[in-house]
Figure 1 (tube, helix red, strand yellow):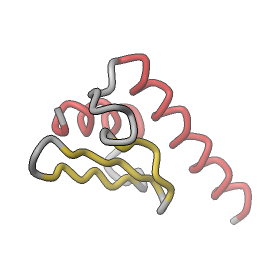
Figure 2 (tube, rainbow, N blue to C red):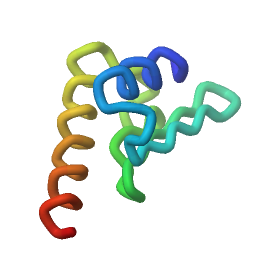
Figure 3 (cartoon, rainbow, N blue to C red):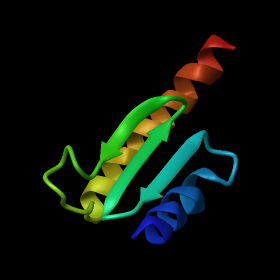
Length: 72
């Protein structure tokens, strides 16, 4: 699942997107961008994200990138 999430995100945002994807044992999975937590499987009742949730996450990442560029 982590590999699929990474592919989805980096395909649209590029390999330089400020994203950290941490798959951990026992089904734990977290994703953060620029230090902000965007997804935590444990906090979402153990459910892996579907495509709609991935789109929401990508939108949040784009917003972080745009805000960072606007402030630069």
